[in-house]
Length: 203
Length: 192
Image (tube, rainbow over all chains, first blue to last red; front, top):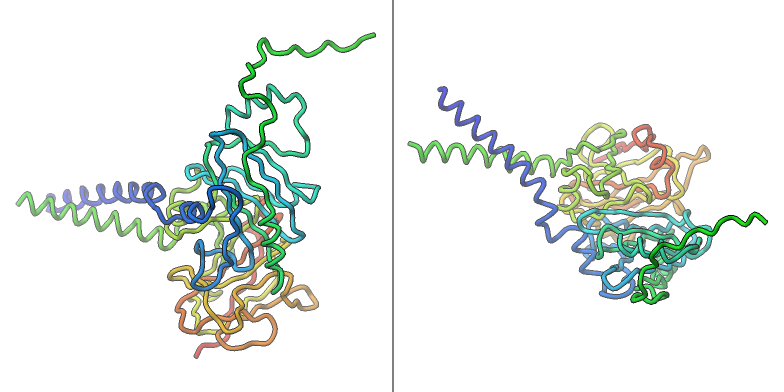
């Protein structure tokens, strides 16, 4: 009897351990997750508009049939990345994510007073360099630091009513998602010692 | 004798481990879930360090969740009386929509999360096309039979359904009052 209880206790303990391993392992081993599916759709360059979510033709499960979606990849290994998105009138949003961290940045069109939303994505190194070199960053361009070099951007745009889809998809297709053209010579040595702030002019 | 005991331990471990993991993921039991009536939301499902159960569930369903900065997605698998939502029955989703610039409502097969084919080619409803009553409330009828007003068609052969109500650009996501949100009720009106 005691032996049976002991076996049961060992079995249950091992079972609980298995439970934890399975739950934690699923996101790592799965090849059919949202990330992988979105990645499979994204062309290596530029923005890919996903086909509308219709029965039998759903790029990713549980997409909203009333939305138009687009994806693009970013790759910071060759330099910073830029996104310039014309905003539609109805709901628009953008989510930046990597496989390991999930979404690290997301906004809706409300974040931009203009009718184009502009951001630049940099990794930690590029951000540091940018802050040193660029004394006055362009206020209209949002600067985002990414936790990894490779990631995806998912755009959502509401296609309202029965006829809104064409307009929403056209706006998404006009989005620029590409490596930022070089503005400074990357071989230029880092400024050192750092430029001192000029003393206030007291005259 | 020892081999038998080892076998017993392995069978118990496998049963407990696999069974419980399947159960929590399939039932979407998660610590970060927010419940309001029939509706459940996982506001932080898209973020790093989120509940591992939510992540596992989202990954197995292939779902790219909405970030809280973009909006909130509520899922319902049961009607207001607590019964599973059936594709062959007629349901009335009625009440006041929570504060949001836009919302959409869609119905999916609960089994594989796919949309249902229908002759009207209508797969969802959005706030710009819904007809409202004078007092601002509205009702959407989800039914395999043709309905007047806001009709979201279902395929009678689709089995059990899940409804998704998505709020885009909603103050709920900022205020931290997700659980207080008043969401529409889901009443079963009739079954064949």
